[in-house]
Image (cartoon, rainbow, N blue to C red; front, side, top):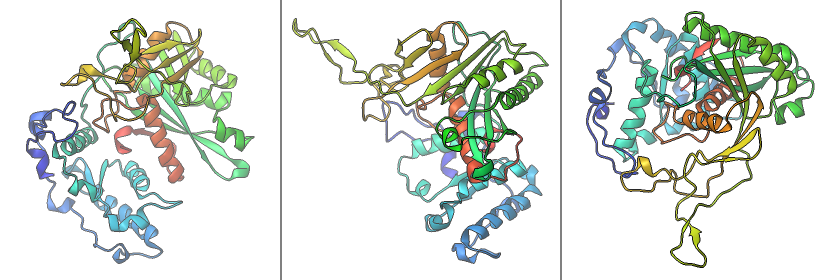
Length: 409
């Protein structure tokens, strides 16, 4: 953590990573260690943790006890750093237990944001990249806003984005969903909250539900009505002029009807399927300098942001691709491997320009505050709700409630 106070020159991805200037210079706020009362030392060996049960049970009890103790000195710190040594891996990851997700769920219970560290962070040699990642994560978890979207041409100011993801919970004979709903309420990045909503209607066909998760009309109306209340609470009781709903699978007719039931007062509503399962690929052609053939494949992929309209309600957008504007050395392809596949956008309800819908999805891939990459493969509305869904799946007793996303980063 002391290294975050210092400046570092990049030693990897030099065409993209800028020099790290130091935490205070970067965020205009100091980074300080908490008082001694807010430090908790666990034994080196996991089998030395107190309590009964196997290693996973004792680890969960130790995390709960530590956060409960830290809650008593909550005014002394902003973010808790938690070290899981590699020697504990046999207990931190298992078929029915994930210590990271369990810790996040406990953090939500006590309203304490946590940052997990493993041994690799201490041996990682690229100090500038490590510093960018850790510093940004800590700043966000301390309720900071590291960056925001520039205004998008053609997008109304009062536009809200909602991402839906589902976690199947309960006995297979009476399975039902917990719906995870993430909001990116405004263009400055505010309002990133989750609704962990307990669906009331049971799932009739579990096999179909696993393939294409969907809600009943009543459940969709209930979860979106609750989400709308959150927006109004943040915006003086006003409704958004436009609401865009993202999910990774097709919208059933009952879901669309439930959405319009809940959003009757919103002028424009769009239901957009954002799928990574596209079979399309593309090669960018450039002039060959010869008469025959006049073109040849470029040495870099299709430019990021390329859109191909497939029909009146579907389009392809290359989120991953060549982005020379961000590089100090010309062409830049994040990851540098494979031919990127586009996202497939299918609009199941709504109207307007598909290019605008694609532009919004592209912009939202820049809003993940939990990494230092140029972009995420999917919009943040999808990514954040998926992460909470995964946490709920691993920690089924997490109550349906409203949570700030920083607790689950």
